[in-house]
Structures are given as structure tokens and as C-alpha cells.
Image (tube, rainbow, N blue to C red; front, side, top):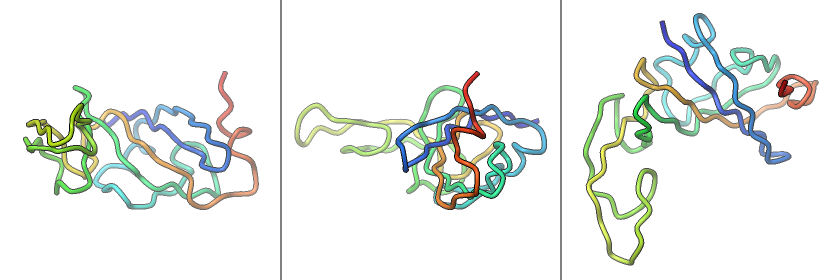
Length: 127
């Protein structure tokens, strides 16, 4: 059974909330890709819509929007998601995961794109 930690970002106030989802709620994310929209009720945000912006797998490898599927791939990167070079022209071979959410995914990054009636802070209050 899939279990994810969803980091929900609210661009209106810059706050990020972490929500653990499992079972039926996690199944709403499975098979989705970076850039797709998901109903916010999966994380307790009824009336909201979330956009998947990224994530990482159980080993901390980032998901990249330019890699199809959910497989591991080694890329020679000059920068971007997964690698931040120290000098100009520096490149490095990095293992990244594809853009599709699978059972290997542990964290999903999402942002609010459509709002409901109740503020996000009231629905996802930190205990």
C-alpha cells in the first residue's frame, strides 16, 4: 500500500504544510505526473485543487519533469533539479527518478492552484 508525505505549499502566504497520506488518499496521487492537478481533499483541503510540482523517492533522489515514467535514470547534468554546480561549465552524472508518482516515491511536493472557502491554515493546522 502506498504511503506519501505531501508537502503542500501555499503561494499566497509562503507557508508549507507536511501531510502524511496513505490508503485511498495516497491512491489519488499514484500514477500522476509532475504538472498534473489533484483534488485537495486527499490531504484534507476540501474545495481546493493542488498541482504536483515534484518529489523524491525513498533514497532522496529527486523527480525530474523531463524524465518519462517512474524509473531511475542517470543523467549528465549541468544544473537544474538534482544538481547545483559550483562553477560555470561544471557537469556531473546524477541518478534521478522520472516524473510519474509510484510506490517508490516517498515525498510529493504540491502547491495550491485553486482555493476553497476556508483558509489553508485552518484546515492544515500544525499540532
